[in-house]
Image 1 (cartoon, rainbow, N blue to C red):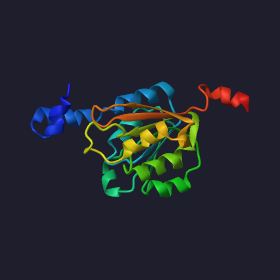
Image 2: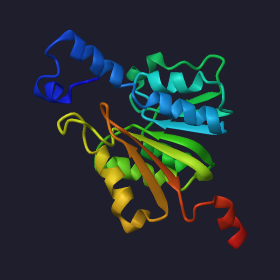
Image 3: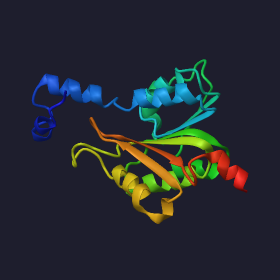
Length: 198
C-alpha cells in the first residue's frame, strides 16, 4: 500500500515509492478492461492517446468492432499498434475531430487536454453521441496530490453538481494516483423505459 503522506512530501525519495507510483498510474486500466469485456461495446473512442499504452491495452481485448483514437501530437504516437486491429487513428485536435464525428459511441475515454475548459468541451462535444447504455471514462478526476494534475477533476465535480448535467450520473474512484470517473446517461434508471415512454 502506498503511503500518500510520504509521496506528498517527496515522491522521488526512494525506489520503492517510485515503483509504486508508476504501477499505480495504470490504476484505471483493469476497470476499463472489465467494462469492455462485460458489455462488449461496438465502438470505443479514446481522446488523447499519448504513447498509446492504454489504447493498445484496450484494443488488444479484441471485443470492439471499431476503435477510434485521437491525438494531436504525432511524435507521441509511435507506440500505437494498429496491425490486425480494427482501429482508426486521427492526428488532429479533439475539437477538429468533433466537427467530423456523428456516429454512436459505446465507450469513450477522455484523457486529452486536462484543462477544465477543454475537458468540458470534449465531454460536451462527444457525450451527445453516446449510445443509450454507453459509458464515458474520464481519467485524472481524483488526483491524490493537488500539484499532480491539471483541472480534469473540475469536470467530474461539474457533472456531479451542475444542472447542465442533470441527465448524467457519475461515480468517481478516488486515486490511488489520479482517479477515474465513470459517467452514463441517466434520464431514468432504465434506458428502455425512456424509449417506451416516448
